[in-house]
Length: 88
Image (spheres, rainbow, N blue to C red):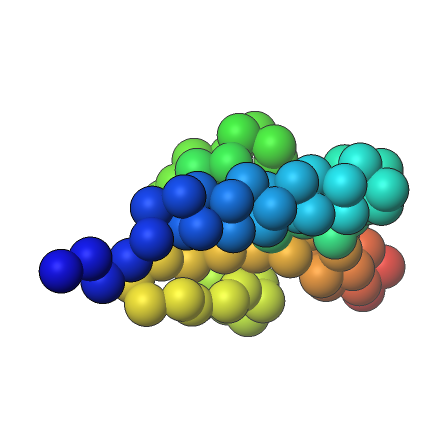
């Protein structure tokens, strides 16, 4: 007894991947630089600070997103808060 028709499944996956790739290339392939989500490691490298410093900034109000156990930063929000802090 065959529950899944392997040929139909393969065709479905191929069509879905093709559609996603077309959409990806139609939109230019990536989000604007400031709209990227960065991990703690990526942001620390981008800003040239240690992970400890970044964690300290998070405690002081640096905006971040928590998805399960992972932490991400929206670059535009980080830049905005840093600009506000330097003006004050």
